[in-house]
Image (cartoon, rainbow, N blue to C red; front, side):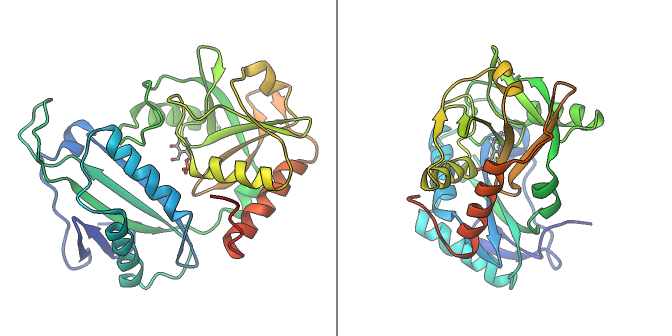
Length: 291
Ligand SMILES: Cc1ncc(COP(=O)(O)O)c(C=O)c1O
């Protein structure tokens, strides 16, 4: 069967070569039946993890938020990630996908205590998306139809994928989600606007995912003396912005060139370019400001 991930995967603490053995997960697994679990994605550059600590902190917070007891400590899990990279002899750029779900039990909304969680991780090769980062993307606006706990990196992505598929058919890459008139984030990335040299983004509360890239970009901006406002804003501010961009682990910082038929980026994007440069520095020179 075709897959994009590298041969060796981590499944419940063991390394499996998927060329030799098909990984098996029960039909009674709650992740499969209910999406009862959480996930995480972190980046490897030249085979080395980027911002791993922050990603694992969020992973543990997500598990805690759904009352899922991790079957490993953070240190044990870091060791398993190292094994995953080493087994695959992976020295390129890639994304590590990690998923943990509550475990196996006959189908029932009520979860039993002391279930053994099911978890796995794999590596998907993924070069830095230079063209996307340079040329930017077209976005549109969509209603934020998600639940009220968007800070949990839950497996339940049905609203996100329904919106993404609808807008993709219309030729857009990402949606600017709006809840009760307030701009929250994208389907799979956080959203920023720039006005008069100031970065503006939605506060890190339950209405957005607390993106690690978002956090990193805010740290970089502060280091570059770019003022940052984490506050609510609505569409008129977006249409009045000088620059707009999305952030996410695989794509880093991606400029927006157009929002529907209502906003076009025609000029330079000096703040975005500065932040992209600083981001690249942080990857290769390990300049990580107060993370
Ligand atoms: C809804 C949503 N917002 C933001 C992000 C960006 O988060 P991060 O920067 O941690 O990748 C993601 C990434 O998957 C996401 O799904």
